[in-house]
Image 1: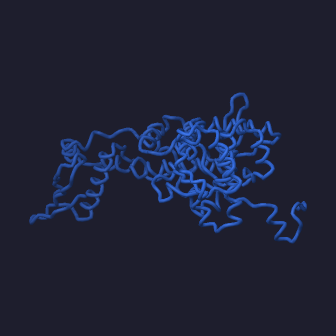
Image 2: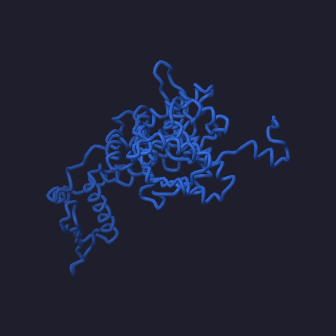
Image 3: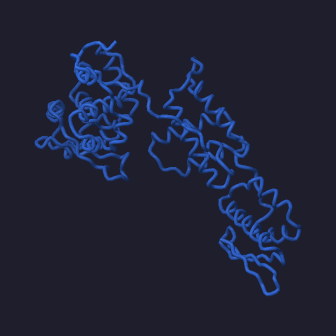
Length: 383
């Protein structure tokens, strides 16, 4: 913060701390109070830019060009003039923004996908201060129409939920750029991203589908893995990977689950009930395991993609058409069934999120509930 002091002779002196934290003073002479306040504001902006290593906005550069040569010389002696930099490029912003983030691998992939879309549209060297609201709207339109590139297949449009997610990331990047003083205002300010929920990709995994999938599993470990996804709603592979036999109390039908995704929240460790359909699968796995083996699942060391492809293959072998969001919908089906029987706030705690998240991203409408509400026999065609 800077301050002004008026001497007995009416001359005003500006006191401030520079970008290196040193206390400085600058005589302004016998100028008006309003002019002094405006000068003070510009100096504060100049110090802020120098601290951040940010480029000055056009208004500040124009103000500095109009200063008297003597004032410019004094600012230069203080190391505060003659150091203007070109406006930061989009590529530089993305690199700096990414370096400030400590997020999970999946979240970082989302950031990288958005960054790729921005660079593909604007170019890595595009100056931030030349990207306006109209340009941001054009990027959004292009993203929605031809956002996903597949080799040998050209382009195809992205789902609305994916577009919304990328817009939210872009908004965060440019809001941060404005906070850092790199631009006056984010070109994405005021842009509505839309819903990140895509109901068309929801699928309730029926009891028959689950049975056929389990029948195709090659051993007790794969059957138990499918079981904890479908009947306990665990995240895969992050929560599966953490499971130890010491976390499972088969007598009390309870399982302690650790969530790396929620490690900073109260539900980072939660208790999940072992429902009757899951119990025999865990008992079979326990019987097939070495008594000294601590980890429940050895295959959990595989990547998300590897497990996804294996279960997708098992579904195909079972004569099932692999449903969208294969692993997510197993978890969502578990929560949907539980929510129909138990209070939602308790079910959400078992699954490791809030009732709001459950309602927005997991709970699925079921035709059987519609039939019962309409007084029709289950299985009656609605069409």
